[in-house]
Length: 454
Image (tube, rainbow, N blue to C red; front, side, top):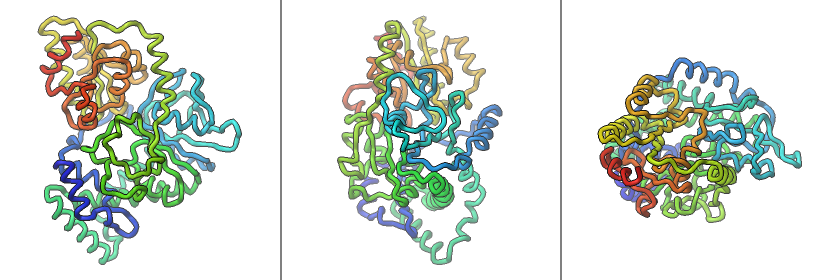
């Protein structure tokens, strides 16, 4: 489905006006409907995490349960899954500046992100939450909203066939009418399945997040990626809590996630109040549903400090070196692509250092024997979960990926960036059209393009 046609249909049929009680139905299911109709979402992976990682998640579920922390706080910050090792600690570069904003300090190379934070005046506290378990610093006790998403996922799976029994006959009929109406507009999309699953998930997560907000009583909420936290955003805004988002990754109008050309400003119930963008270039084609004074440049204090340090300390660029940056939903396709590319290098005896950076969520899914085989046959080096990726970004000549934020940082470090034409590459369409990166559709094409630099 072409995104322009999708936007035309939602405006023509006034889909944003659809409500179930006070719940904005179309806001909740909009991207799911578009993705299903456009084949944007990769097929679900059946890979099972390792037993060790499963126990780690169970440990987090019990010991880092967010409801165990009951003190009130001025601000809640939900970190993204991305972590960088800096000043002997693992930090999230996307929310670090929010933490310093709460502290009333600036990044000067000294970071202390342990336990509760109190700013210099001693008046404002804030609590950090993890969006999903990744890496914790020694002595850092960070509650994890994984407990909420896990409970919601289990209940949705168990209760989905029966949940409408809790509704009145009139409410069930109203939902059936909504489903039928939307199915007529989007005939090839499983509207009924999306609607029921999303609504049930919304009710469960809204209740759990509501309890959390009742306990903590924050005035501000900082996060990344509102789309998988819409029940939290809805509940926070209903309580008068300011919701602030930092852009995570690149987005474009063709993904529709942040593009609302037919909406009045500040009219959405599940969209943040304020949006910090990474760079003006990356949002210039978007029509965000916010007033101009609520769309601000992200300070990137950590990012700038890190880039300057890397430039000053890293050895000159390695000749014949390339870094592949993976995505968790595409790791199988990425590894197949990397293997094919390495085979081409070996066939012509080009001695090139090839590095592979898995997504943070990918480490528990990787086949270690397969990676060892790639290392033995092609010399592929996998960057470890606790390794700093920035020195690699600064050293290599070429960086390859699909839509990782690291690709934008590779551009700042003057690397040649190549975008693979896989699901989600549309996020980078703007900078592809601007000629800042090169679009690649096959290992052979990448081989031909990179031999110039290798």
